[in-house]
Image 1 (cartoon, helix red, strand yellow):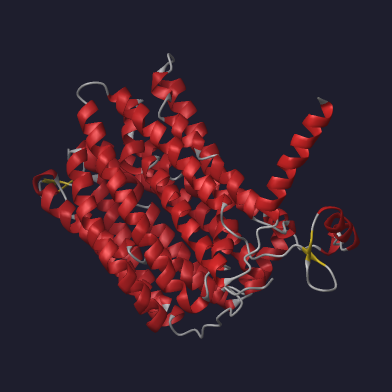
Image 2 (tube, rainbow, N blue to C red):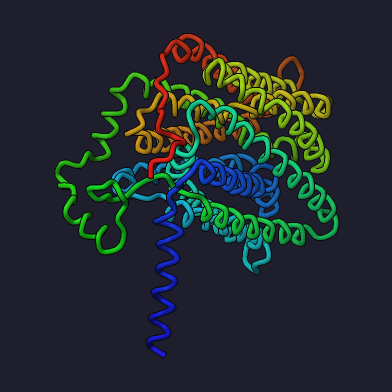
Amino acid sequence: MFNNIMFVHRYLMGQIRRIYFMALPESKEDFKKSRIFYTTADTAAQTIAQLAGGTFLATLMSYCSISDANIGIITSLVSFAALSQLFLVNFFKRIKKYKLLVCLTALQRILFAVLYFIPLLAIGGTSKATIIVLLYFVGQVFVQIGLPASQDWIASLVPGKLRGKYFSIKDSVAVFVVSSTMLLSGVILDYFKPRNLLTGFIIIGILIFLLTLLNVIALSKMKEPKLSYTNENGKEMHGRLAKKAKEDLKTDKASELGILSELKVAFLDRKFRKAFTIQCLYTFAFFICLPFNASYQINDLSLPYTFIMLISFIANLYRIYITPKFGRLADKHGMAKILRYTLFALGLSSLAVTFTVPANAYPLFIISTVFGSTAWAFVGIGLFGVQLDFFKSEKRMVWLTITSSLSGIFGFLFSILGGMILDYLQKADFHLFGIKIYAQQVLNLIGFLIILIAVYYIKYHIETEKIDSNRLDGRVKA
């Protein structure tokens, strides 16, 4: 019996080592398959993010009697959770392989599924709200911990000259799946809202659980072009050989750069400062207004879930069509230039919301959504692409971590500022020339003005920089 247990244990440990520590790509086909699996994993992750955020999370929180201002701040916890990355910088530097870390952190998305079962608990509304906030925050912490590693992982799988094409195709696939799922989920909530909304929550919770499993399985099937310890012939070592090599090459901890030293090195680099600045401007514009728009659409504008999801679905079909075109243009003309145009479209989306009131909610929601879809077709790709272009390859993991964590902190602070402004304006019942001004209109106007500053900065400070491409990404190394 004992021998059988030992055999099973060794077999399982061997499988884990093979899958998570020995999965080196050995051909172009391995790189291609890994990129396909990442597309699948990222599609599942983006779908989970939408189901555990935006309109659906706002509905869950409203059901648990959480105010609009607090809903916006809570949904921005994703940014504050990024602070956890900063304290793990040295841990990330010591890790030789990222795959197991990424898969374990991705598995914690199950916590988002649990959120939708909280209303079933026979406890008070305050207790439900507290549990929702705690689970949401812990889940976001795990997601943020794995984010820089997954970004560096996929960057190493895609040749620099194909980044725009690959990421645009990946996003097109994700948008189609996400928008289809959102439309179906919106219909489900609309159907159960007058009957029994708890049933709708249960269905969404189960869907998030299944998507989490798909996410982890797809990540586990990817290859990782990152060597750990190598021998004199350049071959990777494992098991006892790797353990001995680790002891022989153990770094003197006194010579390791700490968090403050890494921050100093990063901010002394001109290109890092520029990429970080545009990320922060975008973060300001996003978190000062967008986290509060979902509750505005539901509570003040009284837009039906089905209408919101139907228009979003149609607009996303348009987004799917234009995203690959933006990707090809970015490969040809540069990430920064296309980012500038799409960021301006995001500003126009916020400007449309600025003029949206219940009387014109339907047409202006459509206009805002079209501009938003145009922007989201490339803004995320563009920001990430600029960072990959500007960050040194040997510092990429650390600098991605610093950028994500610090901009995340700023995002959370901006959302708190937005929540304070929203709460003040809602209580003041502000009117201009006898017309009621909603708090979200003011916030979106601020967001639009920040976007204009970001567009100017890209034009005169980002596009003028020379790009150094990393020729090692997407190539067979072992």
